[in-house]
Amino acid sequence: MAVFYSFHYVPDHWRVQQVRNIGAIQNDGAIASQEWEKVRYLSTNSIKNWIDTQMSYKRAVVVLIGQETASRDWVQYEIKRAWNLKKPLLGIRIHGLKDQRGLTTYPGEDPFQKIGLRGIPVFTPIGTDSQTKYRNIQENLNLWINQGYRRP
Image (tube, rainbow, N blue to C red):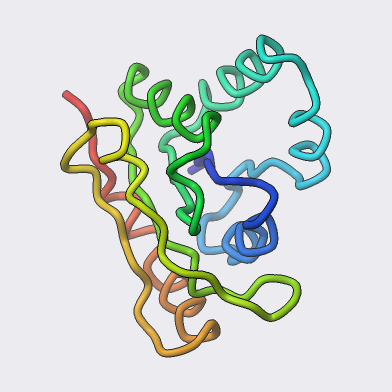
């Protein structure tokens, strides 16, 4: 049940690691954070090839939406690539999860709408604090992935 996680690395990697470590998806084939660190310094073509290869064997693409995610070129590329491959797409807002400094951020723009895609579900975890939002993601991650938009 491997999924491809798309996200803005610098401000959100800590929040993303929380989601990846939930364990709600068994054998999800998630990419180690050290690999992300290496890949982001490659040439444009090498990054595209890496994304294309990683995404090719994933069953869905989950965009983890932070405050600045929608404006990121690589996130936009990954969404368009998933769309072209007819991969199920969905978004999960992660702005309410704490980062390594214990801070949360504001909700970001919907990255799907930003590039003109309508109808892609974006889930906002419920809860009043980071822990309850985390638990909500944990309890619903599989369900949300199954509800991802499937392009005909």
